[in-house]
Length: 80
Image 1: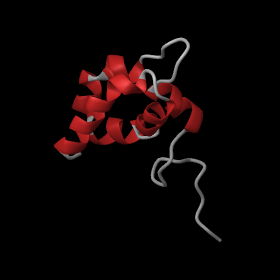
Image 2: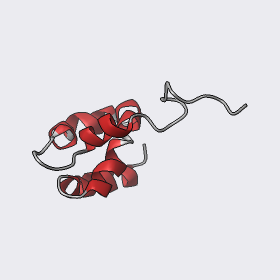
Image 3: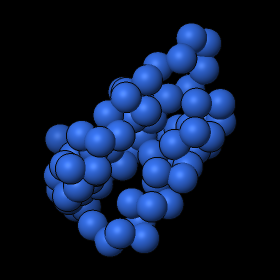
Image 4: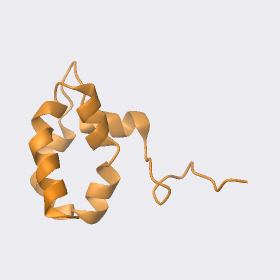
């Protein structure tokens, strides 16, 4: 995963604790972070998995929206 993308995600993590849109944007990409940036995910694990109460979180968004890519989604089916 490009360093610029990871830098942008790291910079956005503080906003994810208070803004639904940021939490959702990061959360739905958690599978890609795990797959393609495991070192980044390990370093930022506390921020990625923090679930404030009440408030949004990347992990909460992942749980709410699930996988969004064809490769990861068990619910995706090819168009007829």
